[in-house]
Amino acid sequence: MINLAYTGLIQIAIAYTLDLVIGDPQWVYHPVRLIGRFIGGIERILRRLFLPDRLASILLTVIVVAGTYLITYGLIESARQWGSFCTILFGAGVIYCAISVKSLGNEAKRVKTFLKKNDLGSARRALSYIVGRDTAHLNEEQVIRACVETVAENSVDSILSPLFYSFLGGPCAAMAYRAVNTLDSMVGHKDEKYIRFGWASARLDDAANYIPARISALLIPVASFLCGCDYKASLKIAFRDGRKHQSPNSGIPEAAVAGALGIQLGGPSTYQGEILEKPLIGDAQNQLTLRSIDMAIMIVHITSLLFLAFGIGSVMCLQYLLNCITGPAAI
Image (cartoon, rainbow, N blue to C red; front, side, top):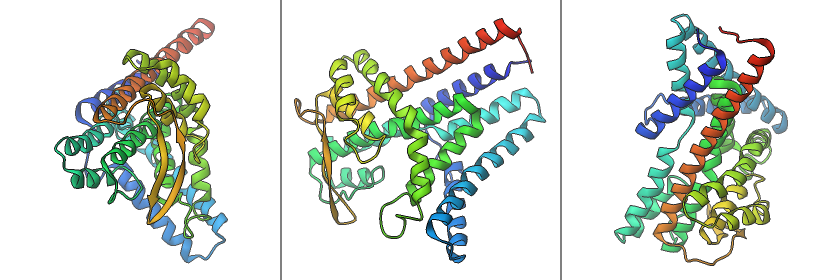
């Protein structure tokens, strides 16, 4: 029989490999889409109850996250009835749906391809699918900046955090994290409709990404070194500018990537017609070019591999120490 720890490592390795080869599956029954429908349904129910917004916010968050965890757990337990092989494959499939390495890079490359063809209109439209800001009037440099920012920021949300919770709690924890992240993207806004209703979801998302974001401040400089970029500036800017962002987490990977490339991110952005002045992150030593997108993608991919290796190594070391103390245990 396979030890539980090694079962989890096998699942994560399979999931990561599938993502690199296939990318995020685009189908109607994708778990994240189902979670989105779940959130929408629970929101409608809670709003009809006319509860105080803060109470409704807590209930929404608890129901969605706990419900996602329990449903995933039930499905995995059902797969376990068919043997360890089915358990491994099903768990790997769950984690595979929770991470997005290849697709993040592909979406950014799609923007770059349109810019390379001097098709700014199509580049703006392609960018609008991966950022929340208004893109209709962005110039080429602003499109590149937004693209680099979203690649850097999503290195935590879409890759490091799902992997982190996969290592901590397996497929159930990975999918519960995706529920947290989806809640934040759907209701964690600061407009009049969601400023209180989405409060608990936004706070939980901040807490869930806190450790992975800070791990990125250490791994992105190492990845920058391996990519031939300025790893010293990456580390320096991550600690200097990482806390400037309104999010306690998003600014850290953005700052690390900005430092590595010697570029400046942030500045004014428009959301639903309103201009938001974002703090400047990094130093404008180099001009933003199409190569900036390529290098940001490469750094993020290498960062994900480093995190994967670090996680696997850590689990194996802990398992070895545990075996030394208690003797090997199999399930």
